[in-house]
Length: 307
Image 1: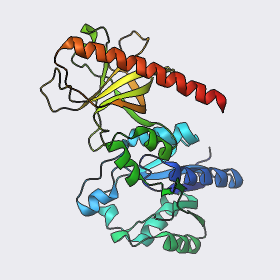
Image 2: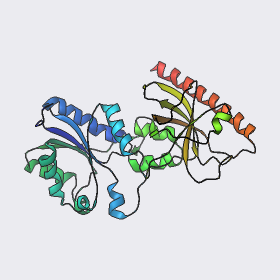
Image 3: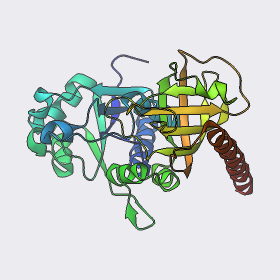
């Protein structure tokens, strides 16, 4: 790949990489193929709104998961991650656009209708088109994507995930909600109950789904999908800590995954997190959750086969 090759750059934060973002990616890929450009994505490491307002915006995905989704779903591996700091926040909007050409060899830009950039968000879609033309490059603006009467947005999807409505969230994402982390040692209780689990946590600033038990698919480093039962919460039956963890029992699997990278995809919230009076009750419920997970994915496979 030549170092002087131009890029078509999709611009945005792309939190969750939902169906509205997908329209940008598809357009960027089409342009790249037509013009022989490198398909690229430019995003930020932290949410601009958090820096501008001082109010933290919980993220649907970590930066790692965002880049992973962009590659897995669209095959785009040229992801430019810009550190959003005070300098970036105060940059004049004209300089931001000029920098895309000068620093990243932008030959074509793609952005959403609501993309804002530059000092106090003074840059908008209209100004992006105007400045791009002044710089001798083209720019496409993607209109809002409406699904079931609702405009797809990261804000709406955050609400769904926080409420545990994973199935509806996945419809607007266009893919399963995902968590990637390195497996760490947990409390070892699952092993004692005959259902060993892997222990994962959420990166700082990443939105934690509603506490409860989820039917999940687990991807290890071999890329094979396995069924999983994932509990998100604070383990009220046996724990006395406020630390939130994601503990997953991988069905029909044995092996030590400590220190390995694992990706969890969430499909359905089976129930809320519960406090049990004893470990036998907990053990019985875990087996019910395992059965519900098998039934869910069995039905899911039948549905897939009908398509």
